[in-house]
Image: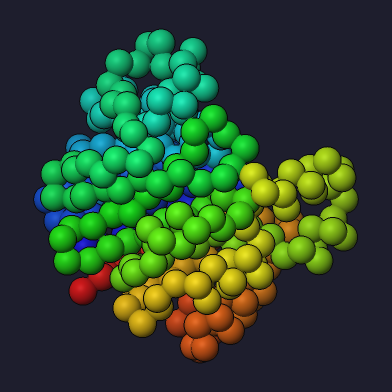
Length: 255
């Protein structure tokens, strides 16, 4: 099982999970043209994608989902709440599959466990992917860490973890105060210290990869996110990956 990112940040997000015979796309915040180019960079054709999973309705996660899925006949999986929030955009698209935010389901060779997160969306979820041998956890777009999040992500082999902002940089930015409060609030985004605190609450001995994701280009710096996570894991900073906005990150293998 392996995973890679097409890009991560406020201008678009998408992750590819590959279990051999099953390849899934998690979110698609890019145009079809950009998505195809970045899939090609990873050696993946759109015909190989068995499904697109949606975390929530914000445009940096769904801007390209339905055009891409419609063009290639790919089913889209989303919660009832997310479906209701973007119902108008779904009118010309019939390939959606409604999922329960607490119920595990399977697509091909991958088992997918959605779990709810506190974020300012209708019914946002994040996901755990498993091929029966390894577990990949994805946690972005959550303003705080709940006990349920700690429980479901307690043991993973790979983790893509939001490090959206540094509190000092956000406070000093020229963002309006209302936006600063939204970002740093209970239903906003994780800062570097929150992400590090989360790592201290879970079992980390099994982790093969940790990638900092959804970094704000204005209110964070890669070295700050990496430093926070490395400190929490007591590991070298070189071991921590970073998902970039333009380049995402290349394939990472779980074995």
